Length: 239
Ligand code: SAH
Image 1 (tube, helix red, strand yellow):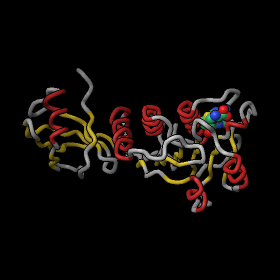
Image 2 (cartoon, helix red, strand yellow; image 1 turned 30 degrees about the vertical axis):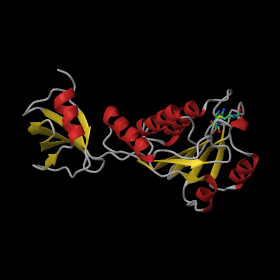
Image 3 (cartoon, helix red, strand yellow; image 1 turned 90 degrees about the vertical axis):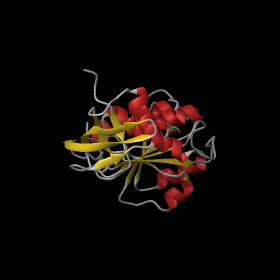
Image 4 (cartoon, helix red, strand yellow; image 1 turned 90 degrees about the horizontal axis):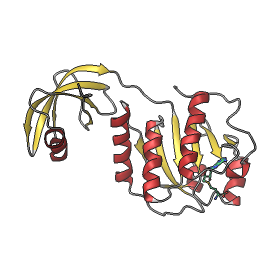
């Protein structure tokens, strides 16, 4: 049997709860996946865990599902925020998708001195995070925040949150995360042009920040994102 369709919905889930479908969701379930009344799919909303739900009503413009049993409780990712400087469109999409798959709790695009793009489409990025959660079996969807200026992020930093600052000038320094304590963390990845000297100086002075090398080669920002998340998960995460 083909694996069950998984769908994110923005509605409460619980025993006997009815979930109404948008036109797009109905098109996907009944037009694309060809499901009929009585078919069972998997639902999650990022809050109430994962539920089996059956198709109670199916038509072209909408429909309804009925929640039956909870199949998994909500599983929160570690308290890891992922800051990155957006790059080209497709590569930015890739970074958000991977950060969601890799278990970031919150994804925040930051504008740095050398950030290529001044704007991001937050809604589109959020949709990518939702799709990633649907695909990877997650029950939690990381929030994709609005783009923020790095300088402002640092002005308002919560000192209880440690920062893994991925510094490309440490290339080859064989200094990955090392011995560190758990708790609240964040990762910071720069843009294609790297960090400016002023940013690097400021970051290096912060007591909460740890400058980290990601090996002997300079990685592209999207590769660096996945590598940093892997290193962090391996040391401190829920792998
Ligand atoms: N143009 C820059 C490279 C930027 S790479 C240069 O040639 O120096 C984009 C981002 O990926 C960097 O800002 C950094 O956050 C991360 N990165 C890439 N390779 C890295 C490495 N070896 N160590 C630490 N961070 C790295």
